[in-house]
Amino acid sequence: MPVIFAAAVFSLVTGFLICDMFLPLRTKSAGCFFLKLSLAVGIGYGITSVLMFVVLSAIGPSAAVSALAEFLLLAVLIAVFIRRKRAGKVMPAEDGGASGCGKSRVYAFSRLFFILAVISCTIVFIVISLRHPNGFWDGWAIWNLKARFISRGGALWTQAFSPLIKWSHPDYPLLVPLSVARCWQYSGVETQVVPAAIAFFFMFGTIGILTYALRLLKNPVQGYLAGIALAATPIFIIHSASQYADVPVGYFFVATLALLYMKEKYEMYSAGISVLAGISMGLAAWTKNEGIIFLASIFFVYSVFRLRKVGFRGYVADVLPMAAGLLPILLVIVYFKTAYPSPNDFVAGQGYSVTMECLTDISILSEVAGAFFSQILWFGSGIFIVLAAYGLFLGIDRKTPFAGMAVTHAVLLGSMLVAYFFIFVTVPHDVTWVLRVSLYRLLVQLWPMCLLLFFVLIKTPSDVK
Amino acid sequence: MNDAGYRMLRVKAAFFCLMAFCFFSITCLIAKEVIEKPLKIGSDSVSVYSKRFNVVREALPPGGVIGYISNKPPEFLEKDNAEAARYYMAQSFLAPVVIANDPDRGIILGNFSQLPEAGKFKGRRYKMVKNFGNGIFIFVNTEK
Image (cartoon, rainbow over the protein chains, first blue to last red):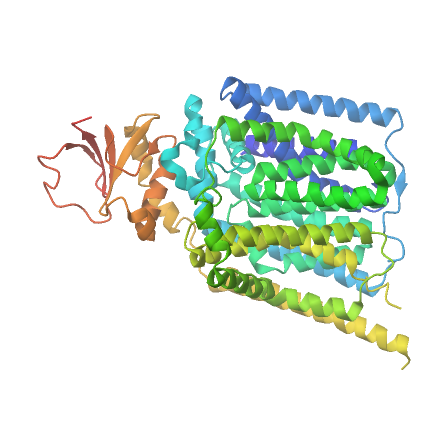
């Protein structure tokens, strides 16, 4: 247990120092600290999983070499942190959006409710995890299976990609399995506490990013409202405990967008935030194949809007640091896909003529469209409808400085839904079955992003006069 | 009440409706997942089923590919969820051995939900080398 705890702390501290290096913002309130802590979860686990994969691919399984690589990275990060602090490069405290909130009753109530919602999530998560210690179906059949191959396999760890077990989706990226295998290897014990704890950190990290990014971008009440809305989405909490990779990939989706909004507000840290956003995009693609769709979509959409806004030179200055953060992870992903090639059953299933038939089949199109409409409308037991009504009452914040980024965000969300729609239409399986088992999970991935967009656009209660 | 007053009233109403919905949602979730369902740690089907593979792992080679037979023909993967679950669990808990869903391997894992008739494999190419007493067998394919 102590070793597992140490491995988790190692990841977290590594992630935190990376975040602090590229976003040296400080605030009087704890908002910025909690945002970095929330970002540290994914970035820490992501970077350590990438390091482990590099060691595995280069020299084979070696817990000692992996640990040494992590230790060296952490030592460098600590040295950089100390040097920056001595050189006075740790930025002075800023207000960070807490001004104007004061000690209003709305603030006090929303803060209290947020704490209660977080405690409730924790209780529900723990109970579901105790009831299903191995996770739900894909948790034990796919994600933890890969972790077992990696931690038990020794030199045969690559059997995880055997075409004889293509039902286990050998093409799936490895952030979650490597994170689990890493802790199992270091501790020498294959305990179910590890995948459950990692799932817990990602759930909390997602709530934390949404809450504290909005706290800094708008004000604390807006942040707490968004956090409460996410914590009150039953399917999000239940699915967090499933030990699937949907909540982790959704984490990186919302982290990337939160960082891009932060870039708009804190222009003096623009380059550093861009690097973090690039890392987050890359780690989304390292978590699930939907992350690759996200990476392509966000790069394209962001580039189009950015080129229009700042011109070519400004765009290059913007994108270069993002590419610097993304490139190392992208190289690892490209190596993974080429060294261990496996077809994706959703994409490689059928030929051109069958695909065109599906795209022109009205019954399939209408079934998929109907499923999208009803599942979106009733997502989270109807929270979508409640939030729509809330937005109508409060109104859109027309003075928001994030209008441009919000449009980019909305177009990105739309393009991902369109991409998912066409994947379902052309899937080489029974479409009714696939919609039943998969659509809600894709919506869980996108939900934190939706909440971020909603609460950025909608006025805060204190804005309405 | 003037316009500003009505606006504030509307905002407060919307805020409290949202909070009420969230409160109701969280309460229902706790009622459904924590209170209504009994919590019996370790009694979930996967944990119970997986225990049978602890001794099986020790009897198998440390890696490589083995075959698989069960009460159903190999097509069960697409037609029979329960049988597929048994196969997936066997693979999940016996990794890093790869369990191919066919009997054409040197070593074969037999995983039967209903025990096969005595002598079912007598005279055939499969020679039973280990019976774990819980529907799990290890066979050797005498032709491989």
